[in-house]
Every structure is written in structure tokens, then in C-alpha cells.
Image 1 (cartoon, rainbow, N blue to C red):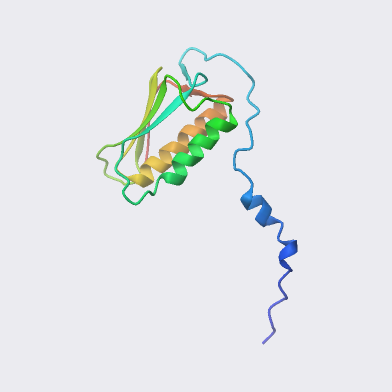
Image 2: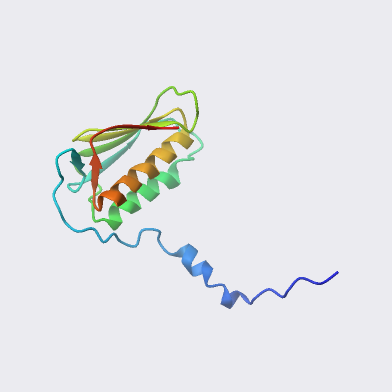
Length: 141
């Protein structure tokens, strides 16, 4: 049996630095105003976790959302609310996102659906090229 190849010295592990780097170093968003049919979050966002999470499974998702806004220079206090809450669904990963001019509700049956909803909200803002969300309701399973 052939021995495994030698492992590189730890000084060659450049991926470790990549893993330590912030996920959101900064967004290259072009300043603009919200268009018709969009909510603007540029004035600041309050995150309101209203779903039971006794094992703190959503801590990293909420931290990521805060880091996402910080990278886009969106203040952590403002008039726009992002709320997470529980609803009944047939599938645990199902989530609903309700977007209004003054709030966004991320609703799911459990933590996995909320996590998926949080990342979907980030993706929508990345596609919009700024802190904007399309008004309306989105549901994914």
C-alpha cells in the first residue's frame, strides 16, 4: 500500500486566512433611490428576532445579516424593521417573506426556514444592487 502524500506545512495553508476574512468586506452599491415597487432600507434597519430559538441556532444568521448591512453602510437603527416569526407550514424549510414599505417579515415553522429566508433577503438586495427589497410576498419550499 502506497503511503499518503506528505501534508504541506501549515505556513502554506493560505485558505485559513480566507476563512478568517469577513464574508462581507463591503458592497459596491451605486447610490440610488428606491423605484416604484421597492422598499428602501437605506435609512437604517432594526432586526427583531421573534421566533423561539432556545439553542441559539440562528445567531450566526442574524450576525451575518448585521454584517451584510454594515458592509453596505446601512445603519443598525432606523425605521425599517426586519422581523422573524413562526408560522405553521407543512415543510420545516418552507419560508414566507412579506415585504412592505416599512417592514419585512421572515416567517417559517422553525429555525432552518428562518435561516433560508434571511439569506434570501440578502440575495434580493444583492440583485437589486443596494438596500432595496421588492414589495410583495415570496414563499419558497
